[in-house]
Length: 149
Picture 1 (tube, rainbow, N blue to C red):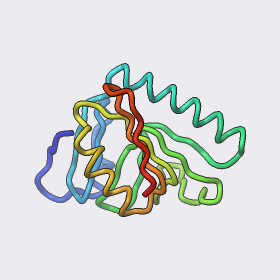
Picture 2 (cartoon, rainbow, N blue to C red; picture 1 turned 120 degrees about the horizontal axis):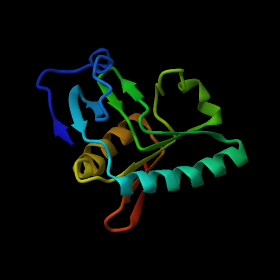
Picture 3 (spheres, rainbow, N blue to C red; picture 1 turned 90 degrees about the vertical axis):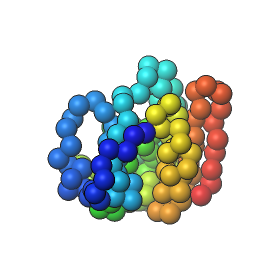
Protein backbone atom coordinates (compact mmCIF):
# COMPACT_ATOMS: atom_id res chain seq x y z
CA UNK A 1 0.00 0.00 0.00
CA UNK A 2 1.63 3.25 -1.11
CA UNK A 3 1.61 6.53 0.76
CA UNK A 4 0.63 9.29 -1.64
CA UNK A 5 -0.08 12.42 0.36
CA UNK A 6 2.01 14.50 2.76
CA UNK A 7 -0.61 16.73 4.45
CA UNK A 8 -3.35 15.33 6.69
CA UNK A 9 -6.35 14.05 4.76
CA UNK A 10 -9.93 13.95 6.00
CA UNK A 11 -13.13 12.24 4.96
CA UNK A 12 -14.05 15.38 3.00
CA UNK A 13 -10.85 14.95 0.93
CA UNK A 14 -11.60 11.25 0.55
CA UNK A 15 -14.98 11.99 -1.02
CA UNK A 16 -13.22 13.97 -3.77
CA UNK A 17 -10.95 11.08 -4.84
CA UNK A 18 -11.54 9.60 -8.31
CA UNK A 19 -13.46 6.39 -8.91
CA UNK A 20 -10.60 4.86 -10.90
CA UNK A 21 -10.43 1.25 -9.69
CA UNK A 22 -7.74 1.92 -7.09
CA UNK A 23 -8.44 1.44 -3.39
CA UNK A 24 -8.10 4.57 -1.33
CA UNK A 25 -7.98 4.57 2.45
CA UNK A 26 -7.09 7.20 5.04
CA UNK A 27 -5.43 6.04 8.24
CA UNK A 28 -4.49 8.60 10.88
CA UNK A 29 -4.89 11.34 8.26
CA UNK A 30 -2.55 9.67 5.78
CA UNK A 31 -3.81 8.68 2.34
CA UNK A 32 -2.97 5.16 1.17
CA UNK A 33 -3.49 3.96 -2.39
CA UNK A 34 -3.47 0.33 -3.51
CA UNK A 35 -4.05 -1.09 -6.98
CA UNK A 36 -7.10 -3.19 -7.73
CA UNK A 37 -6.71 -6.70 -6.26
CA UNK A 38 -5.55 -9.67 -8.33
CA UNK A 39 -7.98 -12.32 -9.57
CA UNK A 40 -7.06 -14.85 -6.83
CA UNK A 41 -7.86 -12.19 -4.24
CA UNK A 42 -11.29 -11.75 -5.83
CA UNK A 43 -11.90 -15.50 -5.93
CA UNK A 44 -11.15 -15.83 -2.23
CA UNK A 45 -13.28 -12.81 -1.42
CA UNK A 46 -16.27 -14.19 -3.32
CA UNK A 47 -15.85 -17.66 -1.77
CA UNK A 48 -15.66 -16.36 1.82
CA UNK A 49 -18.39 -13.78 1.27
CA UNK A 50 -20.76 -16.44 -0.02
CA UNK A 51 -20.18 -18.66 3.03
CA UNK A 52 -20.47 -15.81 5.53
CA UNK A 53 -23.45 -14.24 3.76
CA UNK A 54 -25.34 -17.53 3.60
CA UNK A 55 -24.86 -18.14 7.32
CA UNK A 56 -25.72 -14.57 8.36
CA UNK A 57 -28.80 -14.53 6.12
CA UNK A 58 -30.05 -17.93 7.26
CA UNK A 59 -29.61 -17.02 10.93
CA UNK A 60 -30.95 -13.47 10.37
CA UNK A 61 -28.19 -12.03 12.56
CA UNK A 62 -27.00 -9.01 10.57
CA UNK A 63 -25.58 -7.88 7.25
CA UNK A 64 -22.45 -8.61 5.21
CA UNK A 65 -20.71 -6.14 2.89
CA UNK A 66 -17.72 -6.35 0.54
CA UNK A 67 -15.20 -3.89 -0.85
CA UNK A 68 -15.47 -1.33 -2.14
CA UNK A 69 -17.41 -0.01 0.80
CA UNK A 70 -16.34 2.60 3.29
CA UNK A 71 -15.97 2.06 7.00
CA UNK A 72 -15.68 5.51 8.56
CA UNK A 73 -14.20 5.30 12.04
CA UNK A 74 -13.48 9.04 12.20
CA UNK A 75 -12.81 11.97 9.87
CA UNK A 76 -9.19 10.78 9.54
CA UNK A 77 -9.66 6.99 9.61
CA UNK A 78 -11.55 5.57 6.62
CA UNK A 79 -10.92 2.05 5.29
CA UNK A 80 -12.36 -0.41 2.78
CA UNK A 81 -12.07 -3.89 4.27
CA UNK A 82 -12.52 -6.85 1.93
CA UNK A 83 -15.45 -8.26 3.94
CA UNK A 84 -17.42 -6.65 6.77
CA UNK A 85 -20.14 -8.00 9.07
CA UNK A 86 -22.43 -5.82 11.18
CA UNK A 87 -24.73 -7.53 13.67
CA UNK A 88 -28.47 -6.84 13.59
CA UNK A 89 -28.26 -5.31 17.06
CA UNK A 90 -25.92 -2.63 15.67
CA UNK A 91 -27.67 -1.94 12.35
CA UNK A 92 -27.87 1.79 13.14
CA UNK A 93 -24.19 2.15 12.14
CA UNK A 94 -25.12 1.28 8.54
CA UNK A 95 -26.05 4.32 6.45
CA UNK A 96 -26.95 4.64 2.78
CA UNK A 97 -23.38 5.71 2.04
CA UNK A 98 -21.15 3.80 4.50
CA UNK A 99 -20.64 2.18 7.87
CA UNK A 100 -20.01 4.82 10.53
CA UNK A 101 -18.45 2.84 13.39
CA UNK A 102 -16.61 -0.40 14.04
CA UNK A 103 -18.12 -3.44 12.34
CA UNK A 104 -18.34 -6.57 14.48
CA UNK A 105 -16.13 -8.58 12.14
CA UNK A 106 -13.63 -7.66 9.40
CA UNK A 107 -11.74 -9.77 6.85
CA UNK A 108 -8.66 -8.58 4.96
CA UNK A 109 -7.20 -10.71 2.18
CA UNK A 110 -3.49 -10.07 1.82
CA UNK A 111 -2.10 -8.64 -1.40
CA UNK A 112 1.52 -7.74 -2.13
CA UNK A 113 0.64 -4.06 -1.85
CA UNK A 114 -1.28 -4.37 1.44
CA UNK A 115 0.43 -7.09 3.49
CA UNK A 116 2.31 -4.76 5.85
CA UNK A 117 -0.66 -2.45 6.46
CA UNK A 118 -3.09 -5.35 6.92
CA UNK A 119 -0.86 -7.07 9.47
CA UNK A 120 0.15 -4.01 11.48
CA UNK A 121 -1.52 -0.66 10.82
CA UNK A 122 -5.01 -1.95 10.14
CA UNK A 123 -4.89 -4.53 12.90
CA UNK A 124 -4.07 -1.75 15.37
CA UNK A 125 -6.76 0.48 13.87
CA UNK A 126 -9.42 -2.22 14.15
CA UNK A 127 -8.44 -2.89 17.74
CA UNK A 128 -8.46 0.83 18.58
CA UNK A 129 -11.99 1.33 17.28
CA UNK A 130 -13.49 -1.84 18.74
CA UNK A 131 -13.76 -4.39 15.93
CA UNK A 132 -14.44 -7.64 17.78
CA UNK A 133 -12.95 -10.14 15.34
CA UNK A 134 -10.39 -9.70 12.55
CA UNK A 135 -9.37 -12.32 10.00
CA UNK A 136 -6.23 -12.04 7.88
CA UNK A 137 -6.39 -14.35 4.88
CA UNK A 138 -3.03 -15.20 3.30
CA UNK A 139 -3.53 -16.59 -0.23
CA UNK A 140 0.14 -17.54 -0.59
CA UNK A 141 0.28 -19.54 2.65
CA UNK A 142 -3.36 -20.67 2.34
CA UNK A 143 -4.03 -19.65 5.94
CA UNK A 144 -6.53 -17.62 7.91
CA UNK A 145 -5.33 -15.91 11.08
CA UNK A 146 -8.15 -15.12 13.51
CA UNK A 147 -7.75 -12.28 16.00
CA UNK A 148 -10.24 -11.64 18.78
CA UNK A 149 -9.65 -7.98 19.46
